[in-house]
Image 1 (tube, rainbow, N blue to C red):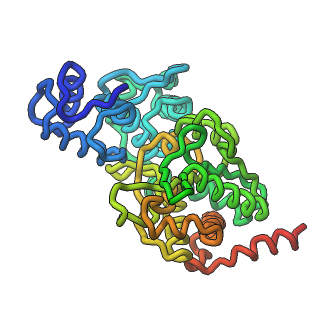
Image 2: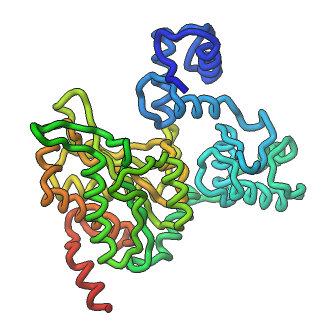
Image 3: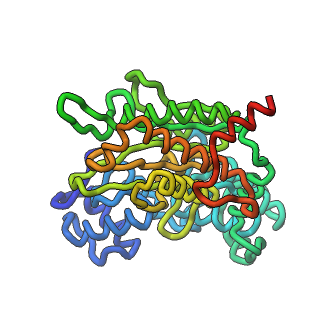
Length: 381
């Protein structure tokens, strides 16, 4: 759909405004996209971890459409092939997790895992275990409180899964996602007779990282090759990682800005402005960000929670790393240097290894000698 923006008017604007009024982000309904509506759209985008631009495109509209639903307003059930999506689903998933039922990540999608969690709850309270959430299930939910204590349930579950996986990288599967590709070159910056593109540089980084991770014993998959091909959407890249049963996903990007002074590295994990997040994904983002900043000296633009499809739909911890601004002379001069790209690769490799260290035996940032990972593997062989 064409992005709806400030200055537009008509039925589509009126529908968007009505949702924003229901969310208490606007006071009055109309069919005009004015300054107040622009502010409300930006506030909504910030609260949902969407890129803040004031435009209502596909991603923002999907989030608005989902946000209109409140738990109890409709019967929820597992639908194939088009699953129910909405704020009510996310609220239910959070409630299931708080009560100790494994609904998976609270991703707002009523999938089979959520249905199984609801059915288990229904069975325990004496209801027919059909996996749907209607009036009777809502009444039962209203009568019962939280079961899990001592920490966030999903954090406890994900942390235990990582603890049981052991500290060795050998045999674990990781998907490296070099952003863009095909006709989509991402950020493009001319440099005299040369031209630097985000797609080419992140593929080079991904290829280097693939070799280093494979040398450490991991099974590594890239989401694309170097040759032009139809670019994959975020949902398709997430689906590929899920189909491979990956343990981790790391997506590599560069950034760009009209202001050349903008520079630095930032890392993103799944989460919303309301505090919901993939807790293990947040830990991976922290480790990747800190290792890159310490080992390269790049400006620390910190970690951020986002609801992008690539992060929301993956079943494993996933992060996206924006490894500097190609439009910044400072960052660009470093990124086009192969030796600097090797520093970035070593930082990510160290972060991946630290993911599998229990918190009690973790090491200081920047202290892992990644060359020893290959030496240890060679000795085992």
